[in-house]
Length: 481
Ligand code: SAH
Ligand code: SF4
Ligand code: F3S
Image 1 (cartoon, protein in one colour):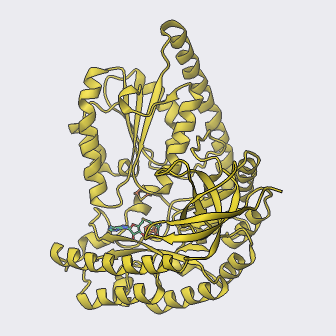
Image 2 (tube, helix red, strand yellow):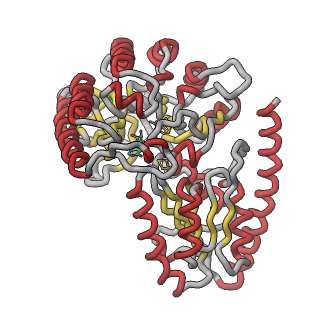
């Protein structure tokens, strides 16, 4: 069977990389005995949670190789920039960043500068780096992340930029080391890639087709996390609702949710991202029935006009979307909904845009991530005629942000005087004498507490509301008996 072969390949690869990691660790240790200096790394991450999760793996490998984490890039011996290419400004930001490292590399020639991530899966970007940024030591992509130890070792002995981009996808390497910054909540990737090919989007081109992890590997990982004290998991994928479709097993995303819901020690389950076309009645019912699944759903609608949705290749209508939202709201009262919206897709008129505003007003999302359409090379939308003028895009974008800000504030106003359950993450950044955490609906709540409550669930009464967070007073500590 296909996936058995993949797994086997995966474990052979892991053994190979483990050997390299051990070798580098020994070298670093000898170096330390001689010089008294540790070796340090610094990882800079752009883009979405997928990249954050990949960076956690890279840091896990670096820890394993005996490097220590440096807060400042100037102190690092290995620097990794994990790139994003979803919109053009993400690319521009990267070039600015690499340029700024030229002096650092000149001052510290032994420092290794590595660039990886989604943007490196595009030929034009790799070519630019090769030609214009010769101080870069190593370039690798999203499909060969697991090969990082071997590539790092090779690049130590290379004069020129070492480039290793793998065009074949498919190997899922399990049990790679991971460095997670949060003790009480964790991101768990359940699938890689995307099959949807929305006409504006570069993600399927740089992340490949959908590949689901085997359910037992996901469950084992979460059981280990729970044993280490983790309380909340967010299941991650570009379209988690299509989990399992590529496996020769009778398991879908709703089944997976039920399995995770059974794991002792885990109190909360979140997931993202969901595609509206794949939200089934079974999934909606499962969300409501599983007590640990939080009242929060990120459901991007992208545009309100059916004509634009069709041109975007989203495979649902405005009516389908609104119907699904109604169903979700009905079975999970008080659910916090969030969304992604694009303004200025080719051919979008002011009338089409009004329909986007109508959806925003009708659904009343707690939060919306709003984007100005950006042309991505190689996508069908890039070649569409009637691209929208910059002026129209910006005018409508500002209108949208204004409408949503009022809605977000109103959604938070509804919390005034209510008690919410908070998972306490640590001291509040602005006032370390207070604590901070999140409600089940994902709201940031700051409050004053009494005892050592970090990592516990407490009830907090909301006394003040703002657009982006809530303030409150602790009522009790649910976990202290
Ligand atoms: N898989 C997720 C998220 C992918 S990228 C999903 O389907 O929802 C995150 C968001 O970036 C998308 O939801 C979309 O709103 C936005 N986006 C993607 N490509 C874009 C482009 N070319 N221009 C502007 N926004 C874009
Ligand atoms: Fe991009 Fe669409 Fe896939 Fe999301 S579902 S990653 S927007 S192609
Ligand atoms: Fe960017 Fe790649 Fe995520 S392109 S948005 S980091 S999947």
